[in-house]
Image (tube, rainbow, N blue to C red; front, top):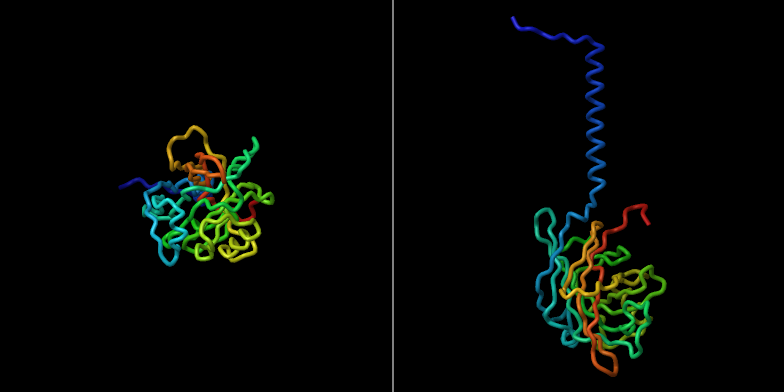
Length: 251
């Protein structure tokens, strides 16, 4: 005859209450742990070589201004490779004639100068195809031109414009025309922009990926900047390619 443990009604109720409280505590602990880990930090980025190909989407006159050896930015999503974009840099960026001031990160660059072309790939999630104002951009080629916008929190930017809107390839554009073409990329009154960051000095590797635990991915390269007169000089150039979207209600 086996022994049996009989629990009174009050003891059963108390046990159930304690188990429920324990389950609630464990659930809350899991939520807090997940909240403390940035969702974007799980996305590693890397680069691969990319080869420039001119075609209807990329006019030959524009392609001739670019280094044909570019880079492809890729990541892993749920264990699957995702190709985000391709970047091709100008063979030479039009520079300023005067020397930049001590506080200017990109004072070497002339406003409206061609920096390169970014191609957003169709297989990438739209979260990876957005500018620094969280505007979703369609897959395709976009011309990147430098500008200094005082109204921006980070005034050093590149403005994006559709490659098929490019007129005379490689020419330097006035700021008003640059903004007009950039609105064709965003489809809104807000131009499509990518922010620049100060280049890390002393870095010989190019391209160089810089990432933080918020999911920001910065691509740093070395560009040849050529003023109207005088020799070209090599300048470090760092651009925010992937920026996590702002949370609802965030600033």
